[in-house]
Amino acid sequence: MPRIIEWLDTVDSTMRVAAERASAGAPAGSVVAAEEQTEGRGRLGRSWQSPRGTGLYFTQILRPALAREQIPVLTLAIGLAAADAIKLFTGVACDIRWPNDLLAGDRKLCGILAQWQAGAVLAGVGVNVNQSEFTEELRPLATSLRMVTGACFDRRLLLKAIAACIDAHVRILETSGASAIVALFTSASSYVEGRRVAVDLPGGLLRGVTAGLTPDGFLKLRREDGTLRTITAGGVRPDVGQ
Ligand code: BTN
Image (cartoon, rainbow, N blue to C red; front, side):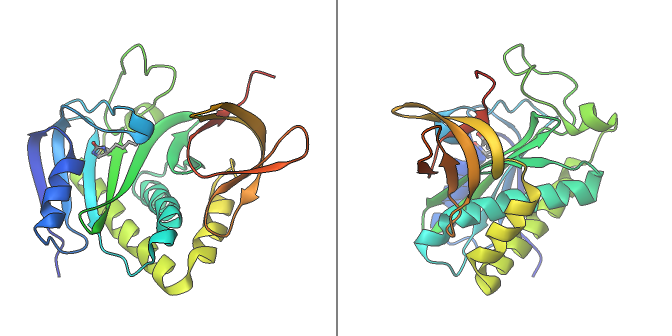
């Protein structure tokens, strides 16, 4: 069955439109994309700058045969899928910062927002594709495929490549289980083991060295006093403060 791809002009957020489509019964694999978003949403309540015509902004509706407790691993699978598709389509090899930030040379190239809503999982993907500059705030943190390679890319084709890879990784999770995704993620991400990081948590900053993933995809952190903490959410970044 061909995938339903709705390519809209201006929306507040493809997450909101996709939630409406999911509630109305849109089949698994359906995609809502937009030329620009006026209220693009990021993880941890942040916003996602979504200027017209340069980035790729879409939300894919997933209806995986998974228990709810496997959703954290699903968010890792979506990041892996986006990294694989970007490598195949553009040649750019990304690192993945847990849980699913795609980085090129330490700058963010792609962000993923996975939400369980309207009886489906909504996989929101934002890729910096053809931007040649960013706002002052983002300049030190972000990069684009164009900035990395010097080339412009067709966003609609890239969308199809990422969507197909997301479906494939959902199948891997359904058929081979969380351990397969945890193993793939561990080999794809330099952040899983031995990285000194700081984690922004609601209660404050937590520092330590990463020590692998739990079987359900959470990040283990070894603290200075030797104790292990499991990070289930939060913003992870290299700790340059020590
Ligand atoms: C992050 O904070 O890294 C996640 C960013 C996710 C952005 C994408 S763009 C398409 C979709 N619609 C949104 O409003 N957000 C996601």
